[in-house]
Amino acid sequence: MEKPTIAGKTPIPVHLEAGKTYAWCSCGNSSNQPFCDGSHKGSSFVPKVFVADETKTAYLCNCKYTVNSPFCDGSHKIL
Image 1 (cartoon, rainbow, N blue to C red):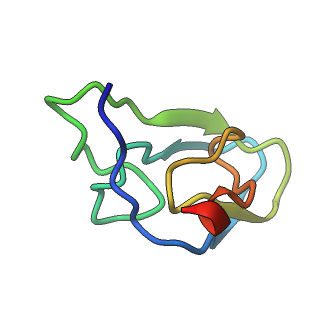
Image 2: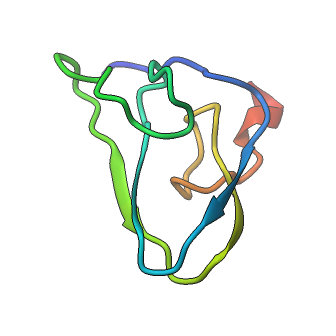
C-alpha cells in the first residue's frame, strides 16, 4: 500500500462555503494544497470529494494521515 506524501505538519485553515463541492488532496503531491490538482493520477490515491454543510473556516489535514478526512484530527503530532 502506498503511503501519502506529508505535505505539511500543520492543518490548513480554509473558508468553506455551504453547498459547494471540494476535492481534498489525499496523496500529498498537489501543488494546490489542501486541494487536489490531479497529481495523484497513476497512483492508488483518489481525492476526497465533499460538500460543505455550512459556511465556515475549517482546518483541513495537510499531513494526509487523518482518520477524519478531510479534516485535521491531530495525527500530524505523532509523525
